[in-house]
Image 1: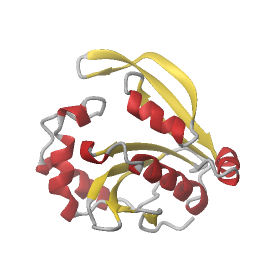
Image 2: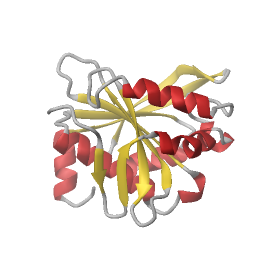
Image 3: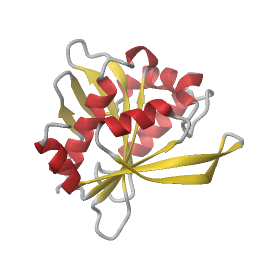
Image 4: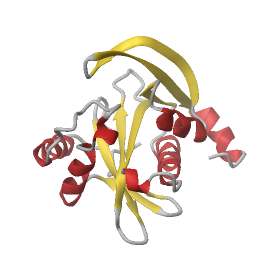
Length: 192
């Protein structure tokens, strides 16, 4: 598929590329201890860190092999930033795999926004971008993330025991995945 900017709509959400207007709220959310707990950044995340992330993202086309892109989750009714999605277009020979991540602001959790945004992202990646396989990795202790990944129909492929060293401790991670064929079945059965 042609490289084009990321954006898609769901019933209540508009998901689009992160922009400069998002950075203050985006960085404030990333600095919250409960948000940073299972993420690669720490509570010292600043507005300058967010600007560097955006600057780096602007140097690569959306969908470019090997690139990461942050997508803003915005509520349609009032334009409120609710969180963000991350997409890594994996640098494999066939360019048909992506890795995803997600962060929802604490005050917007438990309202179905995370599931709606992630399901929309899967739809976008499989139908609009032609991906064959999408994966997600999460710390095994991150129960909210595990629940969300299962809710959108991703299947747990592995528990990678003591596979990473995060924030001073050895951690185990779950690897989740979905194939395009599994997405089509879930969509047909109205699961996603």
